Amino acid sequence: MSQKILIADDEPNILISLEFLMKREGYTVLLARDGQEAIDAIRRERPALVLLDVMMPVKTGFDVCHEVRADEATRDTLIVMLTAKGRDTDVAKGLALGANAYMTKPFSTKDLVQKVRELLAGAPGAAP
Image 1: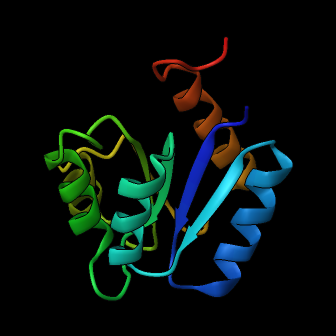
Image 2: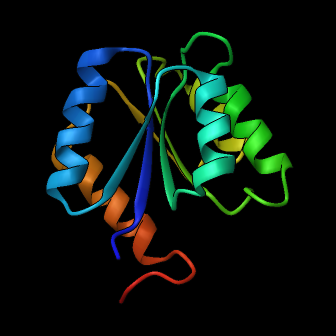
């Protein structure tokens, strides 16, 4: 069974391209278009990993990360924050809130796939 990845981004072109990329890598892909949709999907679907945009409507990626880490049922979900906000303070905030990785846009799809593989390889219950 393939691992589930949730992609949370309010930009349709990014959703489409990341969905294609992750499906090509063999993952089951879920989509969310705002922060509240992301939280609902994480609680309902229990994805192994979330690709999370920081700047989204309803709730920011920072808000989502905080809520996921505060909930005992979802706190082990892997989170990769994807954002155009690349200042050191933004990166530090994302990591302090519990993100497992932080990648700034534009990013290399090769680097993103490698980071996802690395994180999922170290996840509990991950295939060797």
